Image (cartoon, rainbow, N blue to C red; front, side):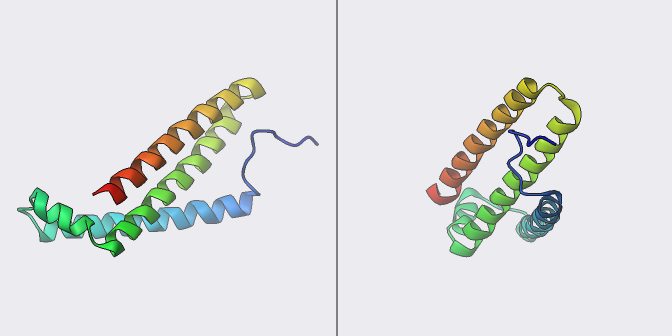
Amino acid sequence: MGVSVTNFSRNGLSDWILQRFSAVVLAVYTVFMVGYLLANPSLDYAQWKEFFSCTGVRIFTLLALISTVAHAWIGMWTISTDYFKPAALRFVFQLVCFLAMFVYFVWGIDIIWGV
């Protein structure tokens, strides 16, 4: 039994737990954001900027961003291992996914903490 070079996860159970935990974080964050938007129907830029200047909101948003990246990585890894049998194709697909997620993560941090 060979070891997959493109497998960055520890095992199926930890992936399953991380996938569920990240889904819960994203669900709670979505309810939080929708609630805020519904409570402030005439939201303007100044209010939005003030809302995101709160450290708690920034940390919660960062947690949601980390959860999005983790959730997406496990999902894309699963898709690639299920549908791309040639190791080279799977590696390229995973590399492109990783690079995209890394760029989005860095960009998201810049947006969250740059406000």
